Amino acid sequence: MFIVDGYGKGITPAKIKYIELAVDRIAKFIIKGEHCIVILTGGDTENGIWKTEAEMMKVVANRIIANKGLPKNLISIMTEECAYNTLTNIYLSKQKLGAEIYDFDRIIIVCNEVHIIKNMFACIKIFGRKMACQKVTFHTFPLTKRFRENVKTFLKTGFEVFGYFYRPFGRYLEYWQWRLRTGRNDRNRFDYWLFRLKYAKSGELL
Image 1 (cartoon, rainbow, N blue to C red):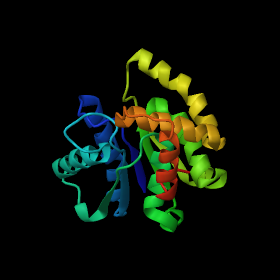
Image 2 (image 1 turned 45 degrees about the vertical axis):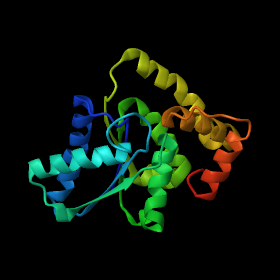
Image 3 (image 1 turned 45 degrees about the horizontal axis):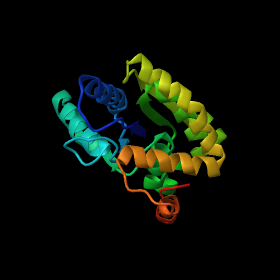
Image 4 (image 1 turned 120 degrees about the vertical axis):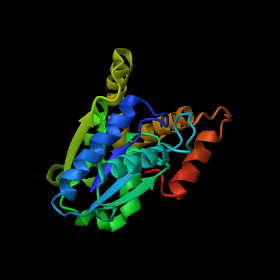
């Protein structure tokens, strides 16, 4: 099965190529007659004509699948439309499948090249070290080529990974990411606790 991370809702040549890369990887299994489950994960994190990243990726993926003439009966596309960072991409994708995820022989994560370290540690956190080492592989694409943006990502990686395993820090960092990426400007002193109460109760926050 595949988990394809989102990176914004706007369509660019790089994002189309990124989704095409995922479809080409899926096609290698379909040619062998294998049925592939694909989770496109990404929430409402950037402006665009679609509601979520996952919705945008599904539109583009279906178009590419049709153009390549791939048999749709061998591809099951699911969308996860609440994630707002790398950890929730993996966590909520697992929640989507439930216990069924342990039945797969392999889990292929498709992600931005500079996000691979975050994805590796997110998989260790969510799946456990043994399963992450035995079943998870990565397929990356240089989705962002702007030097300053990539450096910024690498600098943030350490803080995010620390937050994966030290949850008091991680939950506050994720609250900040959620505010930033969903464009929320309203803030009061109880907003953080409302965020925790809402998303922990719904199962969308570890």
